[in-house]
Image 1 (tube, helix red, strand yellow):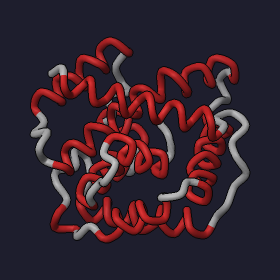
Image 2: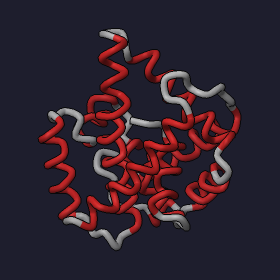
Image 3: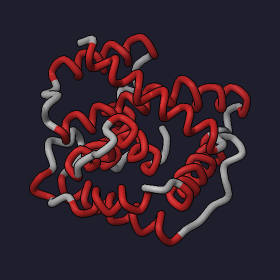
Length: 191
């Protein structure tokens, strides 16, 4: 899974003029606070083939004209693609103690993007401006938990800076996000 800043940038790449409700959806699935529960709601407890089938099934049931639901679906799709293309190769080369350094690297990617991506502060301002009563359904979490996640992460991004990640350099991340947004468009168009 990429950091929340990368989810917002992917949302902008998919929808160049994203609205606040769509962006809130783009971060909503991470409002689930417990790691194991989050893995279930992100379909990470399934193998790759089963996970993709679960995403397709969810997409078929999703009202794609609902911006919050579409943003949430993009989040889950992006995590699926990230895990295959970025996380899994990282795990393969890092071994069993992969998680703490991996988390540091994705945090660096997200913080660096916040301070270097030209629309990052505006994206956070938009998602932060979304009224809590506009949120849609968040499987495994409440609207209050999403509001807290947004506030906490907006402040964290504003207050901390990082050098670029050596594992996930900005150029690699940019290319990944562009490709994933394009592929997500195909994914939803082919339902």
